[in-house]
Amino acid sequence: MIKTEWRYNLYKTIYRSDSVSAKTFDIVLLALILLSSTAVILETVKEFKAAYGSWFTFTAWLTTILFTIEYFLRIIALPKPSRYILSPLGVLDFLAIFPMFLGLFGFASVTFLTVIRLVRLFRLFRVFNLVEYSGEAGVLVDALKSSRHKITVFLVAVMISVTIIGSLMYVIEGPKHGFTSIPRGIYWAIVTITTVGYGDMAPKTYEGQALASLLMLLGFSTIVVPTSIVSAEIAKQRDKTAPTLSNKECFGCGMTGHDLNASYCKYCGSRLWDDHDDD
Image 1 (cartoon, rainbow, N blue to C red):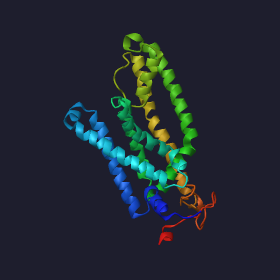
Image 2 (cartoon, one colour):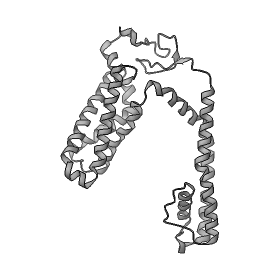
Image 3 (cartoon, rainbow, N blue to C red):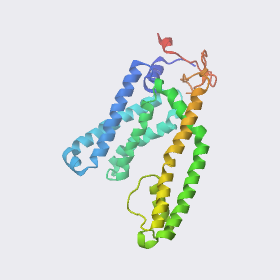
Image 4 (cartoon, rainbow, N blue to C red):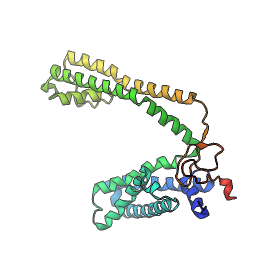
């Protein structure tokens, strides 16, 4: 593979976070995301829209144009553009810019198209995907994967419990106290066990209040049990041996997990360039 210096420099700037230019790019991108999202949110307030409507429109178009330029730069920077275009982040980037252009064809008044621009907030995951955080993110993801079966079993047990208790509340309280059906009873049970407590429905009988008290005590488990499971898995992940593979990403195929002393990608054969290769 012939090294294209300008493309690789562009790749390092917008896909990596281990250089001054890359960190500067991330900071600018973060500012644009926050500016764009704040404008979208405030624009839905009638008073703000009346006073600053033209500013909101200007901000929307400015950020959309800049995000569009960035979108195409990300495509140009990769030897295989489909690697980005078809990735989850690539799809999110596209969804973040296309509503404004649809507005040119008469769809600007559709509320959904305004709200969908907030998918740009998901891009914060990319901005914060810095080298110093990547290892911690990996530990968390691995812990969640390892604990998914235990958490699933727990959630199933919770759903069975709220179904039974919600049904009992329907029998005990009945329609005259707001429990007009079993689904309404289950709704109340979910609101209660999650400690939300809207207050739109409440038991009036002694039996119902006793059952509600039991459910409130069980509600603490919805926080404690999943937290304990994930915490235990995180501890296990940290106890594992130090990584023996490099986190360096291949410029050609985007794969990671190479040997620490590797010079070429074990998946596609492309050379793994270090920053000092450009000196």
